[in-house]
Image (cartoon, rainbow, N blue to C red; front, side, top):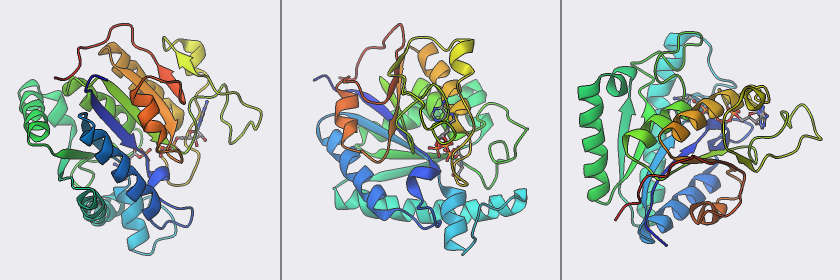
Length: 270
Ligand SMILES: Nc1ncnc2c1ncn2[C@@H]1O[C@H](COP(=O)(O)OP(=O)(O)O)[C@@H](O)[C@H]1O
Ligand SMILES: N[C@@H](CCC(=O)OP(=O)(O)O)C(=O)O
């Protein structure tokens, strides 16, 4: 199989247990599969949410804080803990991680975006796994609702990163198998949609908000991400983070979750 450049995004609901503690087993499994994909010759970029959730857990809070300055402070604690855990788990599997924290301006201003793209390329050439998040402690774009600019959320951020890096594939790992014809947490009989070829108003109408107290964007932001990825000619897949081995199948193009199939495909790495 041809080597691919793959961006994988994990949401807060994937990283945290219901009580707010970190799901260490999940993080370990994620590091193992991503390290293995890299050993297979693929290049991997991880976009990880969880700074606020992990920070809240570490500080003994029972729910996400609501006040902006508190969220920004909690994110500073959580981001540190997140990277500590990623560093530890990826090191177990022989990989080096690199932290990239972004604000709107970094992807919006062309000269900065160009530098950023160069940094990603250099990190991948050095054999690292970049771990990306919004710089929540200095940027309030994402965590302050109603004031969204370019980034807005990590689903969108992952699609921007995928475009910036010329990725072949974007995978959003969530707490759900993919896009359903209604929110399964509200409509138990909802049916999974396996393939989407265009984000039509009918598709948009299916999307609801987040499912847990920890997740933020729900399906809305995932569809925004899908549109951006498809505009760049990049396929996007939404899949359940409970079955991390499915990542192998996704990379091989097998039917898992919901695939948003782009009309044009960029050329592969190497
Ligand atoms: N049509 C839909 N299909 C699937 N999930 C949906 C849909 N509409 C809303 N959702 C909700 O979106 C949630 C996933 O988004 P979110 O909670 O933000 O997770 P993450 O932290 O992974 O980004 C699901 O748990 C589900 O409740
Ligand atoms: N940047 C924030 C995550 C925001 C976000 O998009 O969260 P999610 O919906 O769980 O992917 C954080 O690290 O807490």
